[in-house]
Image (cartoon, rainbow, N blue to C red):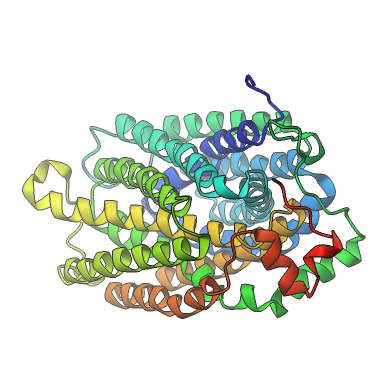
Length: 445
């Protein structure tokens, strides 16, 4: 069968391009440290507001998505990215930090809506044996946006050797691309219209009531499967403040930060794509793949962060030794590869989080709640970590906290992998005390 806009793959790819334009460009800005501003405090405090609101509305966004549907949920979310980039452009001229921080808070609301809808689509639309592949497709397209944004910043700022704020032209390009992503959101189909090639529809629970939806979301805090993943969720964005502000922002020149980010986000594409193939490998059962995946990401992050400790010993918050440039040659290569591996590990870590949640259900309504819960916990961690960064915490202390949280995530993940089954519906039904034979859960063959 030829291309169909109502196919699961087409919808996931569309969401990938939306995130290419909006969160992808935001990541390119944010990974420059302080949103591209020389005074990084404004960007850091905007991030605290962003992730605090993200945590609150991420939890509620599952109910909003289940009521409004993906098109309007994502459209509203994307519009706040345009506003935030505009606030940074405004700051170049007015130095109005309050507006930037307020825009960051509104972006947190919008990001909660966008990412909850995105997570539900990415986990619920593919068939069970394709979930890792669809996550890989999305992550590759999404991070290509951050790569492009970093290329734009690098090209515009190539001759800027000393650290300084981004120019107006950079922000204007980002705003235009974010606006394009916002308009693409209007083309998304309702889940009821999405069908597989054989005509099978996506699983959707009927929207109960607002009260029923809120109760269902709150019950996630009593679901042991979500509780054991809280450390993993909490740690999954915690390290961004350290990597973007302390490593990239404090150590490198403006143009080198952009070059680093091209390779950082490029490594994310590679990391997610290759790791997704491992998670979808059909030669062994899903429980075995979940153990393989956990073992791989554990070995990778332990090796990378130990390398980070040795690198961090070379400079401190009181003696930053910053403004290092890529033209320094061989002394630049080691820090560059460390930064690239930080990106690769991030992609693999988040791919695994999504894959685990996708292994628990096939229902888009249920998975929108899981995605909202994930983003709530993830953003709570990010808000705390950006605040830790903003108050001038010693660099090595930041690193140790990041490393410790990653290690603390492993026991809960191991516990959940022991309960993974080959069909998501079996897991969901068993957890909720239902008998599969009742017919409540329709496995999408």
